[in-house]
Image (cartoon, rainbow, N blue to C red; front, side, top):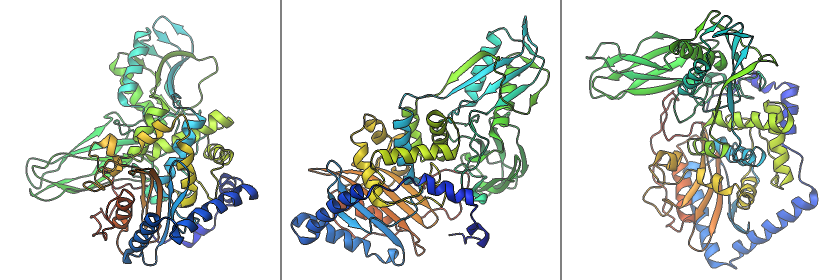
Length: 535
């Protein structure tokens, strides 16, 4: 884990007050004490041996958690009957720990409740000036509606519709309007050195993605080895018209090795630096990297699409600003619904979608497209529904911030609550499914728990950061469904993931087999994607 510079402890007062506010009001004493008494009673029954099967399960889980890889680490576990909330097993359930991407379950539930599964994001093209025949005397405004899934092909279709509406010339400029939300593009307390990587994008109401993984605010580089070792590799940019500059080079290495590609972006601009190598004869490899000022990038890509459709723009691409109130609509694109976007959001642990949802919640529910407003609405949703069973702190929507703190008990309350909501099936089906190799089914669990009693029977959200590994969700047992949460923090001597997986297998009715070695994980985060859930 990276050491924290001393200056990072000097948190601005406004940040501290915002975090405390977002944590939400504490539950009332009678409400909290009643829940605590109920949980204590059920836990006592398990420990006392009133339920022999429960006592055997508790003993097995205790043995698994005694694994040496957890020595010195902080671990919190809560297992409940998903239908009744009865506690089946607990281990430090009130410990405040980093949740990493398991926090996305809270954000997704809040979005489905507060925005609704049918909510869509609209991107519009507006004419800011009078039209004389095919000429627009003024600017053409591309107005973002917060769509995290806007593709270059969608901008091309918008350009086609502008041309089909009879516009052939724009005397002004193409301008980006991202004013639906505020202009704070990086989340609270995000690490500065994560900024180039696809999982830490700048958040804007107008942004582009490159494929149906829907990582907003990114471009994609496809790297193909040259004809022979020593030759430079070919690098193709998507979208091709993105205003970024590639520097450096990637070499072609002798055949038979592994790709060692390093792609990053210099902070403060859109210079993408290439380094490393790919082996001769290897298949192309892909890297994703964030862009600076996503709205300006989208406007440039749109301007190029206009040119392809025969629309000339005299003023090029100009600085963004809000469209005039009397601007006339020319074309509109609507995203998939929030319910549909929940699938890539949770399956692939998409950080960008998480933050788009938070800002949109703030705008729709409080009139302000900001993290402060959105997180306050999420906290109010949690409190209204009695889910604040312990204190907690939510600083963003994705779990990327290391200021987030959650408890296993609080996740248990969410897992029980969600089952009674009309959107539950959408939420549940969007959780990764253990051992299912289909990318949009298994997601970040596609290659975990395969060949075990948990395969296909566990729907759960993963989370991982340096020193953090977490999992929360459901396991379909024989007689009942269990809800479970495992939070592991501050480990250093090997990954605890085999312990987590062994625990889940036991919950699924499998044997309490001592966990084996952890699978190899990349030591350095890059722009390439894998099952590793880099929050």
